[in-house]
Image (cartoon, rainbow, N blue to C red; front, side, top):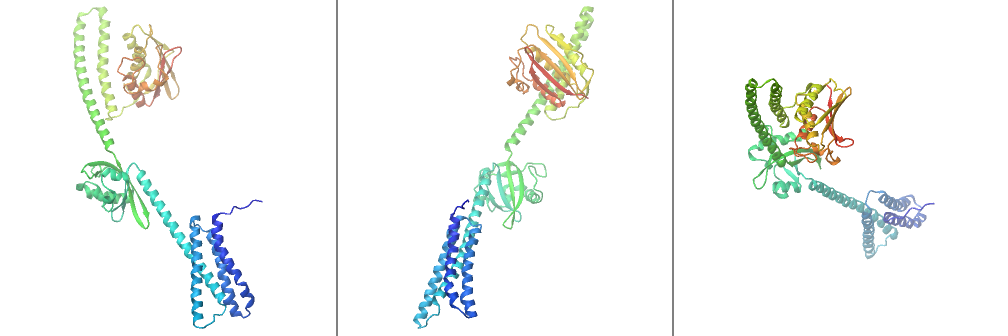
Length: 488
């Protein structure tokens, strides 16, 4: 049989019930002495009910939600009430004695006052304990609330939805504006913003109380700003939420400093503009120079014999490809500068892949290009820049190849939804930790002497096509670049 452990809660609540029990038992002799109904009711039943009430009150204290550390206070108030009423009884008894009167059943009168004082003291103690406990809980809640505010990396302002006055801020808000908390509290929320736009901010505050939407722009498209104590303007993004606290409607506004974001956007815009200017200049100059080259090729055609005609045609073809590349570069720059998106349409994989392989064979006569099986006559979802994808992968397989005779094996496999092109080489291979890194901007392959931009271009183009590109090891040596494209 298990025993329940006696706790401090048992002891303090039991002390109150114990005092009631003593009072109850003390009335038993009086119960046996009374024989009249009125005397029995007023002199026995009522006093014993009060005693029993003190017993029940002790049990209620035990069952109450009061914390254990409040119970000694309740017991203390109970004893204080009893002692106080005993003192009152003594004063009454002494007065009657001085007047020459003899108090009938004086000890029971004192006992009744003793019990009533205990009940009154216990009730006062319970009330006092609850008040203290609620005050402590409120203080803890306030500390947690302030801790949460101060833990926020963003500036937080709490304002009344009725008056717009700021009632609380966190430390980040003080740091953001360079103002102390006491200075900010009591300000109207619109005073946080530039003076010339305060009317708009007042309207936006009213909007936030209804919609609670994120805000970073004013209706005219300009950034939302706050003013610092030093006169600086900081762009912010504002999120708000309305809540009620002690019958007061409040709006909690979270102000995020977006200065770094705006600076990065500006830098990106500047780089995009510079890239576009560079693209236009280079493309213009290359096209002009290649126009001169093709013009000389037309003149030179009159002076070459039949044997040189084939070579001249190859030069003409290569010149035209350079001109086409400038157009491809223009399209790619437009994509990376977000001026437009790539238009995708069905492209013959067989034609693009075989043309690039043929060009590489002419450019690298010492390399062996082997096509495993047939290249299926299938169309993929891409555009004319698909040739740039295979050109870079084939060049990469040759330029990074340290074999005496570079060997490039091309294989194409298809499913109902996609086509995967594998380009394998017999070079030194790429370490596992670099297989993904080589697709980054400016990342070079193993012992590369190139610019490091080729595979970055491949990765971006294939991504725009809705495909995938990755690298795996080749056996016994080298790497395999795989490009998976969606069938048109």
